[in-house]
Image (cartoon, rainbow, N blue to C red; front, side, top):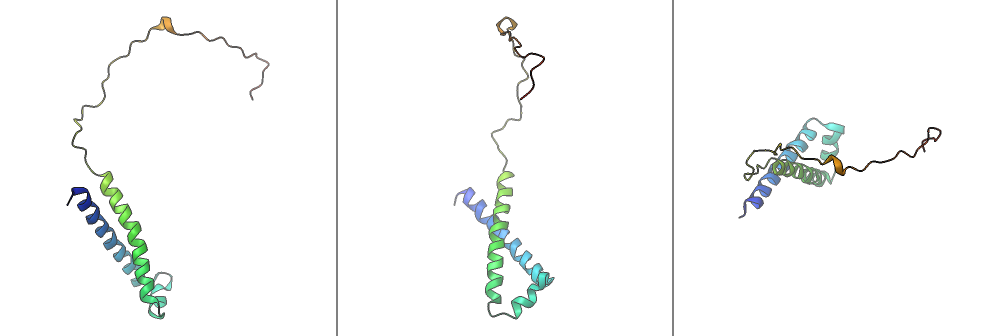
Length: 107
């Protein structure tokens, strides 16, 4: 299996695990009376599964984005840019005449 696919699956599973913990905390702390709504409804289990899946998509995306941004580029030799001076031929500069008068208003 390619390394990128393995990285993706690993971090998606981590994201869905974090989403599961998040939904469990929502239910445990009874945020917005969610525990009561889930336990006293016929579709309570479906609501928890949908809540976990929707949050899982978000957390998995964020987790994978963080993992990709933290990838290290091995090709970089860490020398930075060159600080060479650039020669400028001042004889080639073009003079510009000011055509605006003192009475003109800015538009």
